[in-house]
Length: 329
Image (cartoon, rainbow, N blue to C red):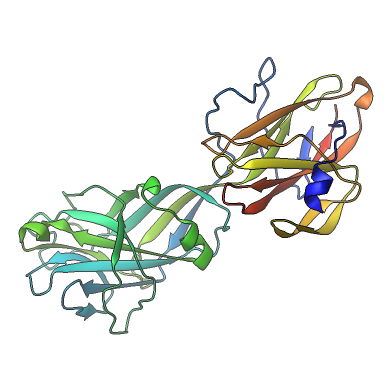
């Protein structure tokens, strides 16, 4: 149904105001008409930064599966019989939309003074944990190591409560599964154990005091932006934060409101009322940025339409953009 509606052609009557009242920050269009076929630089859409506090932490040996269930987040190596003694930390991602495009992740851990640490120059790397099914207090087997997310870090502080930032390589892993199950577990491993060097560093665990680890998450949301909505001009319609090479379907209506639709890609509730018309489909580039243009009739000044997009990725999964109220100037 939505596909057929979106495939019905009509001229666009296109300044911009989201239906929900949130300013989505439309860019000012430059001179000339953007070319859809030209290479595009990935653009920042609805950029958001949030800081999550760890919900759990513990330490587990990679060989003996010994568990340390104290408020200490270790990166330790003692002997071959213990192997890597890895610090695990878990974060709840439920506050981040499943459709978020992760653009930055920083694990911030706070050094714990004492016990002679950092001892013997530990070499620490952060990893994603393969399985989130561990918890402090339980006797868990080591949950496994997935992708390496940082290079080796050295030179840790000795003073108490000094923050240490592990900047994670977001391109090293797919985060969609973590967003869907709302959990992300990370691990600090002392790579000095690879050469059998006894060394360690301690950070505070997830207890509320004195300083639990934090995850600084930067992400973009899929967004529809319209600019240059001027009578007699050429409007610019952009989709930002899509999956690479997605197909962008943008519809418009003269009325807003909740409408439930069954589509080939699932059931959606859109913010447009019948009749709904569409623009010609256009494709996002490798950076997830799609753009098209549309001429506006000279007599359309003062007219208002409501717009929303449906974006279909190469795996045939679809997702709605934000909706917009667009009034022609």
